[in-house]
Amino acid sequence: MSQIADPDMNNEIEFNNETIASLPMIKKLQNLVYLTFLLIGVGLLWPWNNILSATLFFQHNIFKETTIYAKIFTSSMMTVSTLTSLLYNIYLERRQHSYATRVARGLIWQFVTFILITIICALSGSIWMVSEFLLIMILISISAISTAWTQNGIMAIANVYGPEFSQSVMMGQAVAGVLPSVVLLIVSLGKTDDNTNNGSNKGIYFYFLTTSIVCVSCILLFYNTKIDEKFNSISNNDRTDTQPAHETQAVPFRVLYSKLKYLVLSIITTFVVTLIFPVFGANIFVTGLPMSNAQYIPLIFTMWNLGDLCGRFIANWSMFRDPSFTPYKTFIYSVLRIAFIPFFFYFTIQSRTTSDDGQRVHSVILDIEYILLQFLFGVTNGHIISMSFMKVPESLTTDQEKEAAGGFTSIFVSTGLTIGSIISYIFAFMINNITI
Image (cartoon, rainbow, N blue to C red):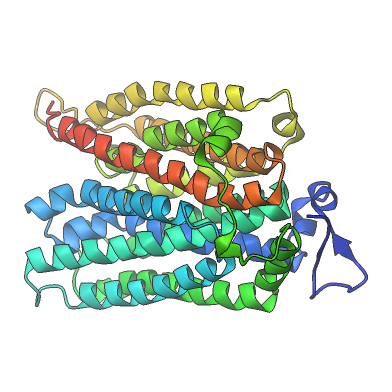
C-alpha cells in the first residue's frame, strides 16, 4: 500500500502510512479515511461493551437479582458471545475474500440486533423469564456473528493500509469501551438508590439504541470515503492472475502462525486474564464513597475503559514501535498481567468485611485504591492488544498475507475471550462463596 487519498481534504494532499505516523493525533483525525477506521473501531466493540456495562441492569431489572438467570447472566453472556465468535471466525478465516462486504454486513445486522434487544427489555415482565433469557442469549450470539463479520473485514483492510490504520481501529475500540460506560454512569447517577422503576428504564433503552445509531453512522462513513472501492482496487491489482478473489489460493494457517506466533499468543493471554474483570467488576461493592452500588459499578467499568483507551494511545509511542520491543517481549508482558488477580481477591474480601458489631467496614481509601487498580488493569489490556495488532502488518510481507491476517488474528481474539469467559465461571463461583 503506497498512498491513500482523502477525498474530503485538499485533493492535492495524499497520505501514506509513514506520513500519518509522524503526525500528532489531532492532525490524524483530520484525515477522513483515518477517522473512518477509528469510528468503525468504535462500532466494532460498542455492542460488546454496551451489554457488558449493562450487566447490573440485566441482573437487577430483567432477571430480578435473586434468580438463577441473574446469577449466571454475566458468565453466560460472555461464553455465548465468545464461543459464537470463535466458531464463526474459524469459518470466515477459511474464506479469504469479500472483506469490504463483511464490514457493512456486520454493521447492518448489529443495528437490527440492538433494536430487538431494546424491544425485549421493554416487554420484560410480559415474557416468561426463561424465554426472555434465551432470546437475549440468541441476540447476543447474532451480535457476536455481526462483530466477527465487521472485525474480520476491517482488520484485513487496515492491515493492507498499514500499522497506523490498525492502530486507529484499536483506538476506536477503546473509545467504544469508554462511551457506553460513561452513558450508563450518567444514567445511574440519575437514580437515588439501587432500586429502579419502570419509568427510569427509559434511559437504559436509549442506551441500547445508541448502538444502532453508531452502526448506521459507521456504514455511512465507510461508503462515503470509498474505502471499500480503494481496497478492492488495491487487492485486485496485487493479484498475479485473473482469478476472482474467492478462487485464489488461501494463505495457509501454519504460514501465518509461524510469522505471528508471539503476537497472537499475546492476544490470547491478554484476553484470558482480562475476562476476569467483568466478574469482579460486578461483585466488588462500594465501601466508603457516597454512592450506591448501582452508581459505583458503572464507575468501575468507566475507569477500566479509560485505562484501556490510555493504553492504546501510548502504544503508538516510539519506544514501543521500536524493533527492539519484539513480539516475544510483548508476550512476556501479557503473561505478567496474571499478577493482578490476587489484588482483585483482596478487594473482594475487603469490600465484604464486617466489623465485630456486624456493620460493614467503610473506607474511601479502599475504594480509590480499587479504582486505580482497575484503571491500571485497563491500561495494560489496551497497551498489549494495540501493540500486538500494530506489529501484525510489520511482520508480514505480502498484501495477501496481510488480508488473511485479519481473519487469522480474529480467531485468536475469540479464542482468548472464549477461554477467559469459561474460566470466569470458576471465579464467579469463588467470589459467590466468599463470606466474611
